[in-house]
Amino acid sequence: MSAVDVQNHAAKDSPSACRENQKRTMSAGDEQNHEQNHGPERAGVPPNPGLPVPVADLKITHTKIFINNDWHESSCGRKIPVFNPANGELICEVEEGVQEDIDKAVKCAREAFQLGSPWRRMDASERGRMLNKLADLVERDHLKLATLEAMDSGKLFLMAYFVDLMGTIKTLRYYGGWADKIQGKTIPVDGEYFTFTRHEPIGVCGQIIPWNFPLMMFAWKIAPALSCGNTVVIKPAEQTPLTALHMASLIKEAGFPPGVVNIVPGYGPTAGHAISHHMDIDKVAFTGSTNVGKLIKKAAGETNLKRVTLELGGKSPNIVFADSDLEHAVEQAHHGLFFNQGQCCLAGSRVFVEEPIYEEFVRRSVEKAQKRVLGNPLVPGVDQGPQIDKVQFDKILELIESGKKEGAKLECGGGAWGQKGLFIQPTVFSDVTDDMRIAKEEIFGPVQQIMKFRSIDEVIKRANNTHYGLAAGVFTNDINKALTIAAALQAGTVW
Image (cartoon, rainbow, N blue to C red; front, side, top):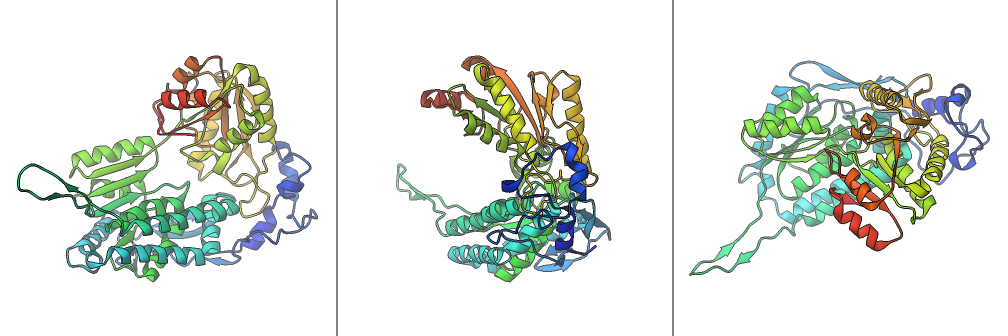
């Protein structure tokens, strides 16, 4: 299916009402009623004229490999099927890039980086202007890109529109502003010497991005590289290549010279392997799982010692003290876990709650989770869409089962939801201990684990007892306590 009738699909799978007007909780027991429902209009909820609407009859126009500002078929002749995780329907097929396609892309990127090329001779301010032009084009195609993102990844359309697209635009503009402000230094040294430093582009940058924030990660990777004058070969995740391929058309329209940005959809073991092992790639940036990150770093050591930037998994502690604003803490901990169906590396997936407020925190968290509305992510009023694919879906359910078997108390959820699509019920576990798999492994799904603690020293030790160190959160009204905990936590970001 190369075209999708968004309106018909939305009418078929709409929730019974927008969140503000919902009178009942949408839970597993409501699945049959939900399936029989025919949209917000039938339920008497008028459409909100202030909200954007997904593009109807959206045609998928870009499915080929983008190299040297042109579209190419795969050298292997195979295609990657792209599915809508909300209903399991085939959206389209895109060309599958392999080693030969990566080689071709790297060759073009290297030629575009050669001294004397249009890209290398371009003024830094002009590079910045092109990034801002690209941001303008993203703004122009805001609705189309948000619709693609929601269909492709199962992300809520309104979240894609207001969060991912705005983040993409701001990222492009931010790095566009940096292009002519990258400066070196002069350094006084002994003797008759004049010493200075000059920041120069690294060269050809290989980039591998994940499926949970496809468009925003695309911008996070290409924008700083292009701002500094590098060229790029980027592989989007095989599950979510559509927004990256649409961006290819905008990159060409913005005026970037041929070879500066090359986009090759493909699978990790083939196209990703080719990027990480390529002898003519100078730098690799990867966002994804920790296990794959280890393979990429190993590949760099075994080949040309290319520079590597890795942004990997997390099992972030969220610490709630008894002196915090309880309602605020419950709200933020809820969104910190369930945001984007729990598919977020920064998710606050280990919630530590001080003993005096533990029972009330659990009660309110369960109440909040049970009110989440599941359904078609293209429709307003839905709080949670599907998981990205069957592999992730099965992994999450398997970890939920492990929590039950290991003695955690299942407060709500705990299974699949709906008759079609890859939906999982919002799940909350209490009485979780640190040795359980759900407390140690990255679930990457809508599963909240709530644990009890009694002292500051105890919670610091337990929060740091992990192989991860991505992020953490602290809820307290005592600034001294907040700063003490933040300094003690072994995490790159602390809220």
